[in-house]
Length: 234
Image 1 (cartoon, rainbow, N blue to C red):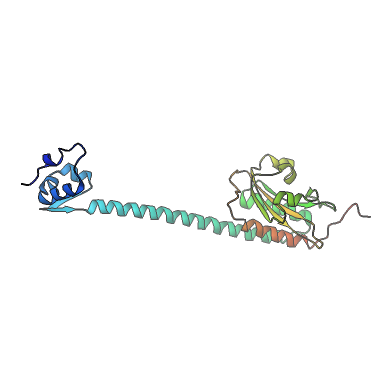
Image 2: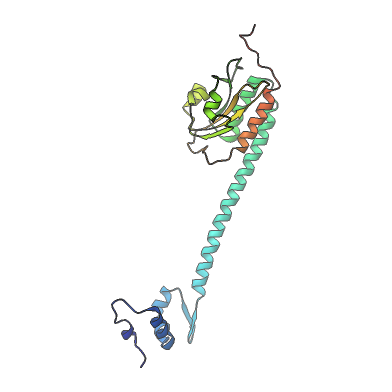
């Protein structure tokens, strides 16, 4: 004797799937006649004993396409942002190469940081003893290693010593920083470039530093063109 729908659902725990599957195979009209259930399952009946899985399959396909489209748009946005940043970096490098002296270089770097990259500012710093060019910030001996770590090349993240890295008019606007070591002259005078962002997430430790490092290398090569005069050496 074949089971009825009532027989299958007498158990409090409900029927096992093999029983349900067997019941639907033996008496499929219970499912085919229940339009509400078919709509809930995303199915529809197209003919005798035929169930159209098109809507459910199409829904899944549309979801996949939507996810892939969103991922593609995100990748395209990142690519466009990277391309724009690279273009601005190259223009800024050309501008730095036109600097006439240490002071002009510092001014051009700060202007490029603000105008081309939307930063709060950028500074050039160099350790004492020795002369400190006008427009640069002085550092005490050992400060570069203290900021970057011994032999460290870069630092991205929270501002370690804002009052040292930036002038008073910029300190309050800086919430994150990118520091890049400079090693101009022979013997080397430790120095660095500081790029400050007003966004706490503007520079983070998991970011790359290639573009900032590129500008730092350009500045380093420019610095080596001019000697630093020491006003105390006489």
